[in-house]
Image (cartoon, rainbow, N blue to C red; front, side, top):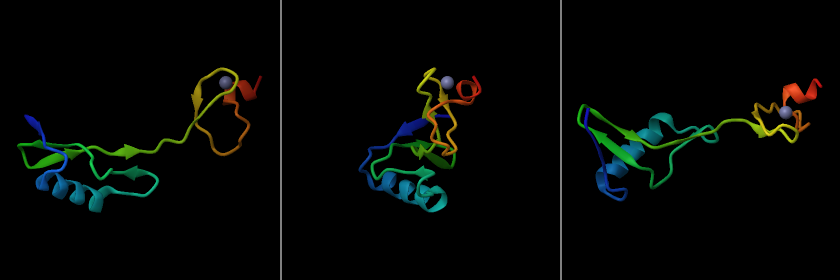
Length: 82
Ligand SMILES: [Zn+2]
């Protein structure tokens, strides 16, 4: 399956971006930049670059990235249980 990156400010790239935004954009969870890369795949669609949000924090004690549910301790579960 061949992919061809479209020029970011081309009309076709803009139209694919708008379709992607309508279908997938969810503020704060999945966002598509105005100039997002678009790769046209010759089989009925295109890939549009997007940002996905991931909740996480860096543990102040061991440096591991952990899921932060807002407890705000700055410690991962392992370090909190020590
Ligand atoms: Zn830790």
